[in-house]
Length: 366
Image (tube, rainbow, N blue to C red; front, side, top):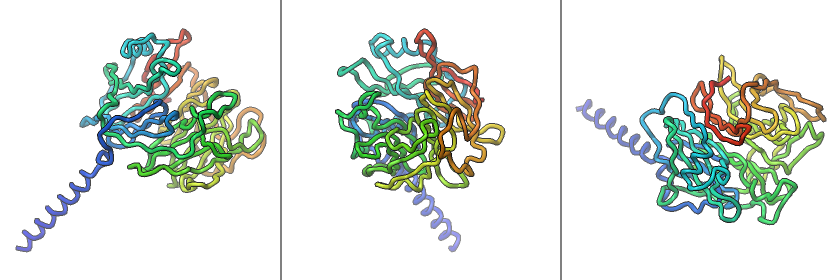
């Protein structure tokens, strides 16, 4: 009798656990059509949920891709002449198609691109999926399961600096970690540089934390330059964001400090050279050590060490050249505009050739 009671209790527990598992992140998404105005920064949440940053609409969307195979595909992903193929898919010339970001779904190994179709006021946002065989298809954005978090304090449409409209930099980079969506970009406040930690599933997005950093190449503290790209990274079991800025200061920012309305001072752990814009970065492990791989506009692809990064006290004086965390430039990689981790040993890169052609290539992590 007692054994039957134990078995029944275990069965009830299994059902309860199964029910809890069934209440997945997908349950927070509702059927509809996202009112996406622009497709920019991309990242993946669990369960094949794609996060899309919309700077013009000042919102982050979570979209169910339905891309959940039993195991990820293996092998390289290569697409030559990507621009022409995207143009053919969207019915445009290659020059009228702009790729904004690249992400890989870790569940499937398929690549996703955020694309601007056309130019000017008539341009439209598109999400494109590329599978391991190189097949390219548009991800449907009508009658899909999605959620939306609206950012409360974006730059106004009339705000500009020498680079152009600030509204386009409302969201510059995205990442998901530990149940939160981290969003970097600009706000309409005096301390414009913002980092937000939005719980996922979405409820509401708060005003975010204002970020101040010391920029060694400029010899001053700055609050208006946005994070260009970042990665979540644990240091001594504490969550940090490692963030890169224009003219290439690399900064560590404790996630625990990212509270709404707070003014947070990051620690500049490296100056990697001025006259440069970081484009994308990933973190990976090789030979038992962690590294950052960073694509840049003018300084190639850098492999940056994380060794002793937790002990770095920070750069607080003007720097000529480079300082802090050491790096090497990967000489064989030219024209890399975007990169994403494909698996534990490979990265997927978007390369722009000297003639303007775009290719997707798989490379071993250096």
